[in-house]
Amino acid sequence: MEFRQLQHFVAVAEAGHFSHAADELNISQSGLSASVRALERALAVPVFERTTRSVVLTAAGRTLLGHARRILREVEATEASLAAVRDAQAGTLAIGVVQTFTAVDLPAAIARLHAGHPRVQMLLREAPTADLLAAVDDGELDLAFVALDATPLPAGLIALRDYPETLVVVVGAEHPLANRGPVRLADLADQPFVEFQAGLGLQTVVAALFRDAGVPRQIAFRTSQMEQALSLVGHGLGVAVVPEPVARRSGLPVLQLGPVGDDGTPPVRRLALVGRTTVPTNPAARAFLALVPA
Picture 1: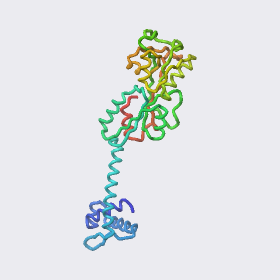
Picture 2: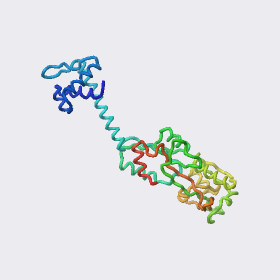
Picture 3: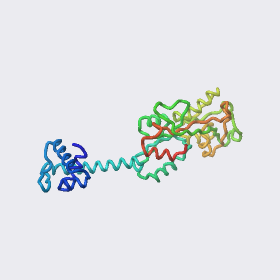
Picture 4: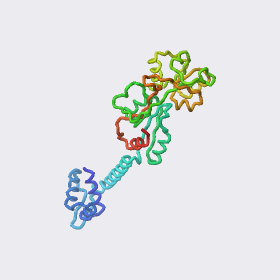
C-alpha cells in the first residue's frame, strides 16, 4: 500500500466517480483506475463497487476511508512542520556557553534570532568546556561557545568562530600592586592566587602561561564561580588572572600583563563557537550563525 494510492482512493471516494476524481487529480482516468486496482490487490479486498454511472464504497472501503483520511492529514502536517524547520520558522536550537563568555552579546543575538524566527525554541545550557564539547559531539547541542586551551579540538568538531580575549590581573583596592602599571608574570610569583576552576579553558590557559614562563604560583583559593573568585580578590585574599572584559566589569583594579611571547603581544585565551560541520544541518543553527559576528 502506497501513499499515492491512498490519495487516489480518497479522491475517488469523495468524488463518487473515477472521471471526476481524475480531473481533480490531473491524471488520466486509466492511470487512476490502475492505481486503485493496485491498492485493492495490496489489501486483498475490493474497496469500491463499480457501476456504469458511479462507484460505491464497499464495507472494507468504508473502513479504509477514515484511516486513509487520517494518514493523509498526518502526512500533510508532517510536511508542513518539516517545511517550517527547513525555513528556520520552527524547530529547536540548542546552544551551550561557558561561564565568563563575553566575546559576543549572546542575549542580544538570541533576541535577534527570536525576532526573525519567533517559533524556534531556544535551549541554552551553561557548563564547563569539556562538557559542552561532549554535548556538541553527541548531538545534544547544535553549537557551543567554549574556552579552549592549546589542546586541539576533538575530532569531528570545528571552530566556526574564533574570539581571542586578552588576559589581565585583578587585585583588591588596597593591594600594593593596585596603582601599578603593567606587571610581569614574575612580579606575581609571591602572590596568593584565587583560581577560577571550571575545567578546560581559562584555568588551563593560566596554568600553562605561568608554567611556560617558569613562574610558580601559590593557589590560595579555587572556585568554579567567577563572581566568588572576584569577591575573594576584592576582599584582599589574593589576585586572579581573568579575561579583560570580566575584569573591567568587576570594578576591581586591573593590571595589564606584560608581553609573554616573542611577538610582544599580551597573553590571551581563545574562545570559539564550535559545531560539528562547517555549515550546520539545523536551519535554525544556520540562521543563528549568520547573526553572530566573525
